[in-house]
Length: 322
Image (cartoon, rainbow, N blue to C red):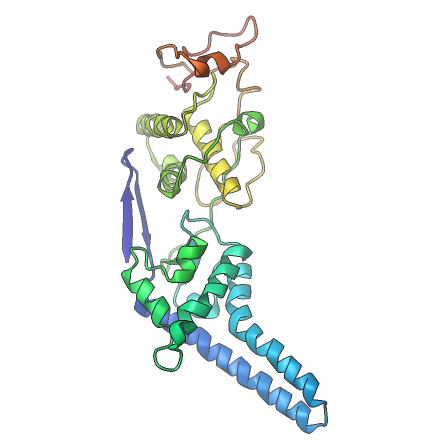
């Protein structure tokens, strides 16, 4: 199922979510493999019982190994194989977070635990196994089963024949760590992060003028949402890079290390612009857009640049290239 989101900044986000038939087939492949492993384990335990091993020990081993194969198999593979199991990999599917980031162990654990309800819920295992999960996949907009909804994940379809997508990890430009700590992104949701992420990944494909215009509009929108006034010298793309890095860190994803120079990040984003020596020193190499001076607590809280530095943009604002 193709899903698109059009942001106010005219950034189109698109991805293909896996539908119910494809996910059922992938689950059938995984279940077949689990059944083969389960038969092998039980056969091995039976041979050990015939060899004279104590029945108590074999029963304990069976109680440990059977749940491990049923629930540990998908949890371990999805956590270690970037959201894939053998069944998903065979059909070109992968589990990612709703922000498009790779899942971690906690996501896989929540999905695996919720499978108790998705697959075995309502006591209908023998009558209609998987009825809860199939129903939620069929009715949800993003084809999410209950485990996906609780874990904040979706199952996406990877394009056949295309280069394998590498999840993007956004870095705070070098020198901007203290400034990044002041940017509170708690007011941003998944759609806003998707808009920022999509722009940063596609920015190298844009011509300079549209790229600057879209970056400025998007940065203004994000700054307004979180009620943030950028200090002098901060360009729109630097601010957006900080927002993306902070959202990833807030969501539990491992942030990329600070970029000491133009650094290519995974996923196709081009260069991360180097930060000025200090975001508040007034070291600005780009012209600034005139803006009206702010009033109230925000203006009072903004530190003044040191003596002798170039005049900062009026009221903070983003540094805009000529």
